[in-house]
Amino acid sequence: MAAADFRASFELHLPDFNLAPRFEMGSEMAVLFGASGAGKSLTLRALAGLVRPDQGFIRLNGHALFDSAEQIDLSPQDRGVGYVPQHYALFPHQSIAKNVAFGLHDLPNAEREARVSELLARMRLERLADRKPGEVSGGQQQRTALARALARRPDLLLMDEPFAAVEEDLRAHLREELLMIQKDFAIPVLLVTHSRSEAYALAERLIVISEGEIVQSEGRDEVFRRPRTPTVARLMGMTNILQVKVIDGTGPELLADWGAFRLAISHSGSGAPGGTLTVGVRPEEIRIEPAGSDAQPANRLTARLAKDEPQGVDHVLQFTVDDQMLEVRVSHPAFMASDLAAGQERTLTVEPESIHVIPDQD
Amino acid sequence: MVSPLVLSLRVAGLATLFAVVFGVALAALLARRHGMAANITDAAVTLPLVLPPTVLGYYLLVLLGAQSPLGAWLESIGIDLVFTWQGAVVAATIVALPLVVGSTRAAIEAVDPDLRDVARTLGRSNTAIFLTIILPLAWRGLLAGGMLAFARALGEFGATLMIAGNIPGRTQTLPIAIYDSVQAGDLASANRQALLLTVVAVILLVGIRYLGSALAGRNVRGRS
Image 1 (cartoon, each protein chain N blue to C red):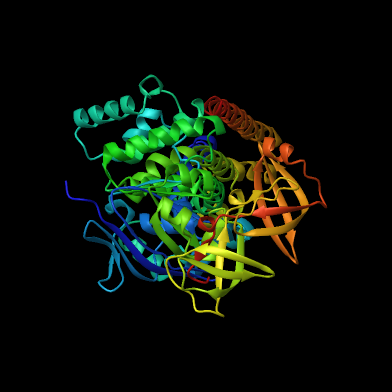
Image 2: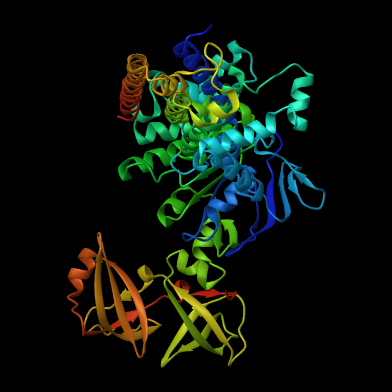
């Protein structure tokens, strides 16, 4: 089988919003990730042919689904694209089996029935075949919607927030299942989410969208570790974005000043002395030194605890460093061990490898 | 000679049939379109609801009479709508149409648009989607519209009198017969005829209630 190739680059102008996504992907699980209102669902709808872009192209395996230059605009019926909208949109008056069979109207009866039973078996829905969608669980509804979309053997599968209607403790299992299905069917799967943990758990490729534009599209770890813009950094949970002034960019480690503090930064490129750089630090990669510690690692900052927000098993601590803020995330036991209270001063340390240079501006 | 009751049921039944067929088609068109043409069509369909029936009947008489081009053309192909029971069907259809369009349209618009979108990505034509998804889900609204249309057509008086006249045994429907009896001072006949129409109306009401609760019960089961 030839490797799948899916690319899109188009513009869609609405009165109050401009969508201009541009990305490509292969036969892989890609997550279109962004804040709400970034244009994720609208992008999926355009790819499925449900809204028409003003210009640009959408190509799947070398064929144009849409191309404004060549005046091609295939209908949703002719695109060979499976689409699972938010909340699945199962047909409430039809049985699970009928829902799955809905797109197979042009197959001979015997073949249609064979394919429906095969899919019901694959999705573990055989015993629910005669039930209505309203009579089965959220996870079963999701699998029905998947089976219905896959029944026509699409060349691309689009899913909008597939886990929104599923209870939290079922999600991990369903994610595993979805990854297996992607491998089985070997087609590009593009799914939309606004949840970072979900994006991280599912994505091979992470396509980050912000205000209608794709700001980064790379392997998941690439995007997670090396966000290209401050927006991507924040979306990836790299909440500390600092402006530093380059002092010496010639050595193996770049030296830069952040306020009164000198930082050593692992950086392969070189910075011009006197120039400014944007760097990001994950809140979980900042260490709080024990009170009275006289260890002398590089990158020491004196900070005062301003606020403690417990978040589940972690504590998110807001420190003030001079007139700036630093966010630090520690586990609950670590927080208890540190014996910290608001208003106290501590030394924070960061490894040079944990400070990431963000190459582009927003 | 046709009795007023039989004629009334025939006229109302045929008018309901036409109103449902045209009404559903119009509702399907209007539900998804919001342009100038849609607004004008919507207004034209709704007009009989606010226009006094006698005025509507007068317009029909002018439009369908032999003096008008349309009337002349209809006459040339052997269709005579003035002072015939078929004319009464036309009048009743027009007054019943907005009731079907209104309730069917509301029911169609209440169907989740995602269902239609998904169905399109599954390769089905718009007609197939309408027949297999939209209509079965909007069925209650259509039924309610049909019942209202029948009731409205059955009670039609003003427009019918204008276009079809009051010819006993040929165009005299039950409401017109009641008026006729009262005019002639024949209160015994008026009582009998009024009672007849009341019975039909009550049966219709019970039918609407029964179907409504039966369908509601089905929906509840589907949702549990």
